[in-house]
Image (cartoon, rainbow, N blue to C red; front, side, top):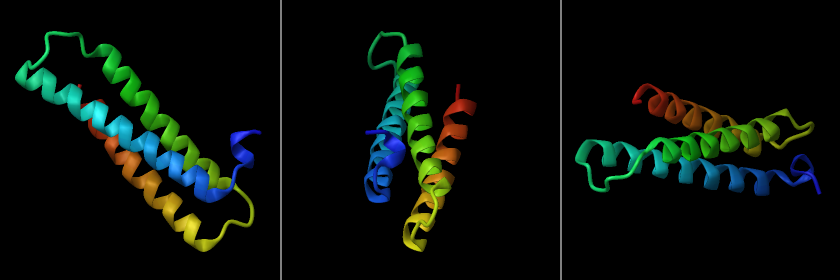
Length: 95
């Protein structure tokens, strides 16, 4: 089954989980570069963080582009796009 064929609540839940995981990984990367907790390269962690945030953003856009979406899901999708977009810009500019 394609992801675009899944119901809106499932897509929004996955979008939230991907976005939250990406934000947490990005925050861990910033904290590690600030306090040097672990002597490891943070490039791969930043890449995975950006990938997860883009996946969450994409899933929210898929929900918004569907036809005949309930107003509740449309509002949740718009809020997820706004939050993930701002978080993504923050992490891009923090590099």
